[in-house]
Image 1 (cartoon, rainbow, N blue to C red):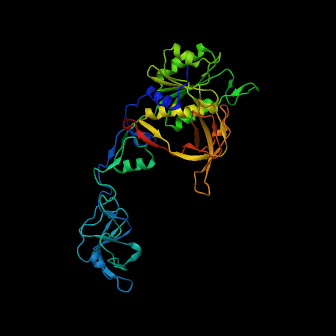
Image 2: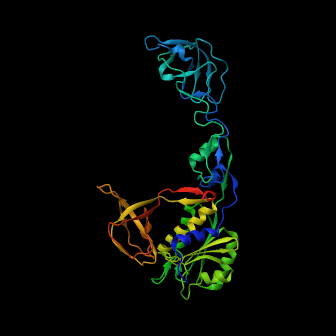
Image 3: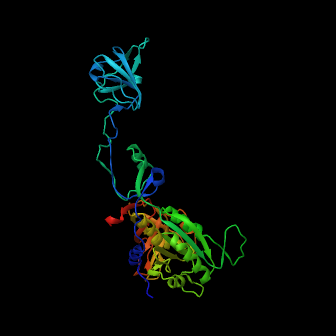
Length: 417
């Protein structure tokens, strides 16, 4: 079977899943989710004119010419705290003690901060040592947001600052896409759980932890972690049990064409419909994406380096699409720190350890790491993937290529794509 080019495979794989139905979640439970609809301000922020400082609410005109030698003296008629209403309208010659966030007394148009004033010894009056203009140290109603102002679009990730805005508007819930439920099954007779004794010919099983963490970083709720020997009956039983319980089922290992690589055979016998089966990609060539009933299935290679790349290019986009968004990574141009030879028919994704600026202002150097499907250290603290596209075998040192950066990405709503 011919290998599918990477761009076409990524596009075909997205058909394995649809955005989840929106749900209303309490604000803290919505943290990290994506908004399912745009939000407009339901009220003004601030809701009323209020003091930006601890000080004195005054008529600005009555402070004209005031200084340390000739203070303006006003009679104290009220004290207003945040969350309380003024008890009266200020008349000429009067001031009200106010605290930060307290509503502005009717009749006042400015605040003199407390450092520039001093009450008289008997507490009946206050001396003001500065001249202020109308609006001084005030927060005007709606100066940040007016009612009806568009605030957030569908697809906005709900981070701490978004939660703060929603709470300040009085919202108790947010309409978001729920987290995709994910099950992960690692396969292989050679695998030994971490913490157990292993012989030199055995391998400590790392993929379940690796892939589960990658899935969580993409917003998933990992509900099941399973293991299976290279036994078709055992694997069939595990997949049959788990698939109906999750939105995305991910397997690692057994993805190739060896005698003991049985994952794709088992899925086919279960009625899975393969959308992608083998990609012109290195590492990660055996990756497959299928639909099993209502569940999306991603078949990852067993080597951790290949599993990481294949997850990044196929499982991660599916998890985000379930949440109603498509990830938009930043791509930059950089020059290869060394020459690379590759198979001409494959796209290589090579780990970039660092991007180093050049004195001449040209594209930065992309410092490459040694690449291998079985290597796992290569991706620690990586900056991104250098993309060596199909169609060529040799790339020279200093040649400029695209680099997919792992910086915080942008997200686009699926409906807008």
